[in-house]
Amino acid sequence: METFKIVTYPHQAEPATDLSAFCEAEAKKAHDFHASFDVYQETPLTSLPGLAAALGVKEIRVKDESYRFGLNAFKVLGGSYALGRYIAKKLGEDIAELPASRILSEEVRGRLGEVTFVTATDGNHGRGVAWTANRLGQHSVVYMPKGSAQERLDNIRAEGADASITDLNYDEAVRLANSKAESEGWVMVQDTAWEGYTDIPLWIMQGYTTMGYEIVKRLETEGAEPPTHLFLQAGVGSMAGAMAGFFSSYYGEKRPFITIVEPEKANCVFRTAEANDGKLHFVTGEMNTIMAGLACGEPCTIGWEVLKNCADAFISCPDYAAADGMRVLAAPKKGDPVVVSGESGAATTGCVANILTREDLADLKEKLHLDENSRILFISTEGDTDKENYRNVVWNGKYNRYE
Ligand SMILES: Cc1ncc(COP(=O)(O)O)c(C=O)c1O
Image 1 (cartoon, helix red, strand yellow):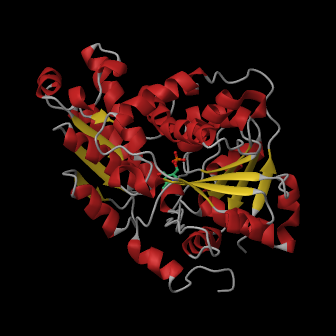
Image 2 (cartoon, protein in one colour):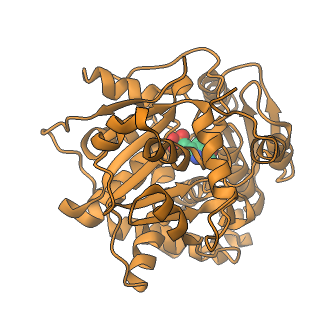
């Protein structure tokens, strides 16, 4: 029986995680790099007062990453920044000296030579890596897990990548990409870290903090109060770790209550928190969830280092919660704008909408300390990246708890 599960996490008192990689100055560096691309635009931080009233909380804001670089997901922030940092290191320069105008120039390309970047991805990350490699005049190879949507494959190929859908799960596809990198002399650009592979994943995570930087600066410009609750969806936990690290570093003791949300079929971060034994816990096998971006079974080591100190709660949820979130955001209360949010993007909204409207989930509401004073922040990390499924969910009501 599919169900919601929660673990509230006793923070590890010592040693506290070093958050300097996610401080404001580092986030600004990533932000300034992204802002140097001519496609850059800050993504909307949409306020949903009608939804907040309906759910009995004070405020709900959604950072809408469907507008990111015309790529329909936040992921390009990580891939592009990692490639930028890789090139900066190769050339012995500071990333601050390598804005888009220089990094895309013939001069830099000439000094760098030909490079092939390789990655494994459900779609969004690979599209970001392919997009960046394409603009840099370089090659990319992308391996996708079994069951990946044709539309996501087509979008990656449209960026010039040599992309294919394998018959492996996500974690196995990562190992394939890694062995190809070793045998072919390619550069592995993976959005998760493991022992001995940390530079590029850390740069990817730092790239994600552009979202956090935009959010806090936008709130300050609007004179709005910071959120009391931040909900972050996790695949391997790189994005969640980066954002939790940034918000914890930026707000210090006033940081929001941070909750991590995962699909129950791929809840490796939840299991790691639940076991609380100092080890990472994996999920293996098919991980058959509609939240394709979250279908990962092995936590990112760097992400977990941050989350074990900075996350307050972990939730494992059924697929219909993500579908509910897509519908809630697609059919807003009168006066609220529409947010087009895909399966992984809407998981957090759907989870919270269930928790705040169902008697049988009242204990989760209490454990999350949600009440009429709560100011909630969601990150809709993708738009309708699988349009066929988006319509099946939003128009045809597929994946609901009454099925
Ligand atoms: C849309 C979307 N949201 C969230 C995530 C989760 O990010 P992470 O794997 O860093 O936890 C992904 C990962 O691919 C994604 O594509």
